[in-house]
Length: 156
Image 1 (cartoon, rainbow, N blue to C red):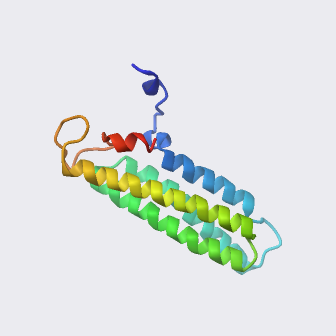
Image 2 (tube, helix red, strand yellow):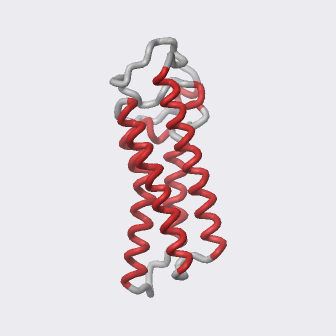
């Protein structure tokens, strides 16, 4: 058993860098959004924004316990949630909930998340077309907590 095996969590999605990055974004967002003195429209935007951010992590977690095809589906849903957060960032900026610095930080984090998710999707798609790193043939019905491709190691 090597050191990496000792550090793997019970819930494998917790070892994904995408999940950790999404969680960091959620915490940052909670710190940025005001909690009082808001109009009902602003509260609605805030709730929608937080839900979209949480959906990035939730879809990543849910998909990681599924087979390859389903994991790809959930990762694409996570990517859609990232795009929702881009729209929420712009709305929050325009109505004064986020200042310019927070807006730029949000956009930077979301760009990084979408690149990470896109890389994982590409890695999973490549590994399903041929032989994964393990040398055994792939099958879309294989349960896939963590793919066996070399590129995936960079995601965790």
